Length: 456
Ligand code: ARG
Image 1 (tube, rainbow, N blue to C red):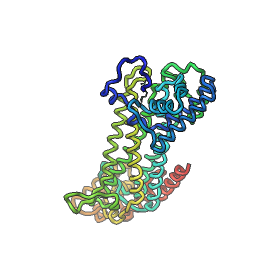
Image 2 (image 1 turned 60 degrees about the vertical axis):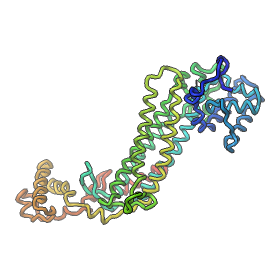
Image 3 (image 1 turned 90 degrees about the horizontal axis):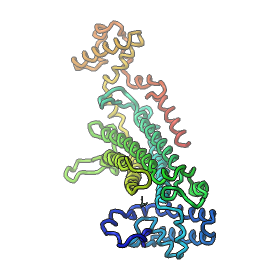
């Protein structure tokens, strides 16, 4: 039995059914559907649309349906077009015609908007907690690497020395912004469409404040027409996920590079690496490539769904059914990615000697310019002078520190014997102690601040 057979003279075409039915995926929110129905039945009784015994029978029936789902005993039937149809069909089988009173004044339009918001709120909570675990792993690994030196890059060219903790903590803050985005998406989601009917509102004077509160929403939606077609909450979550995935992808790319034997900065445990079917020596970081690859798919889910929404006429349109598979896919993918990234960050093996070996004195060229600046040379001139010094060293295939003082002084008389002190990577890092810099003391403060975020 479908929910809308009355005005139809022939059964639906099979291919239409395959296209139209959403039971294959919306069954995932049977719990939210039943919770919404329980609250709705009580609201109908409060408004004296149905008798309280009827509401009691409906609630008891719905609890039984829920039980069947939970124990795996729920049997789908051919006519079950979507989860809403399936639940109501089974309710009526269990408690008889009184079950048919549940849908009074309600539409699947306000029903599905409510169910999916509830589901999405829970999904956002789970993602936030998985993200917290990754942030905690970043903080923990960073704590032991506050003094470990490594080359920092711009344009993927060696730039200036930084510390491993500073590198890793940069991802903490990206993920912290992702937390904010998830949190604010979660907050905007917490608006209850139930009681909006198909589009025009509910004619039975239901207490929508109560319905919203009973379902754990912050407030009822303000406009019934908007409420049934608003999927901003799906877009919000898809965006928060897409951006978070792109952060994971960037971290993955760094890990891929730094674990490459040409860098050798870090080593991944065998359990997070994969081999080659042909080349026996290979040890590939496939999980990191999947972080990178799947980020593309998650960005695609966002772009695809925004395109679906664009230009829809007012009110509910079946296009909106497309919200589910993309969000399910994005959430499921994140649930796969986040724990793997957390485990990899927590077990990162850092090779400090390899990092130090890759620190070339050119990374201190800025420090050399700063040395001149401290002696009163305008930075622009200092930059030019050091450029000449670097060229001299590079032409003579020698390190900067190996250039004799007279050669330096031939370029600028400001150079003195104390220039030797510049060629110290730890000093270079320690000097960057302005708020937010890579100096170990600053990074320690950064970590302390991060910890307060983890516990707040
Ligand atoms: N399966 C539908 C969806 O996900 C439920 C709402 C159907 N409403 C309708 N008027 N056909 O959007």
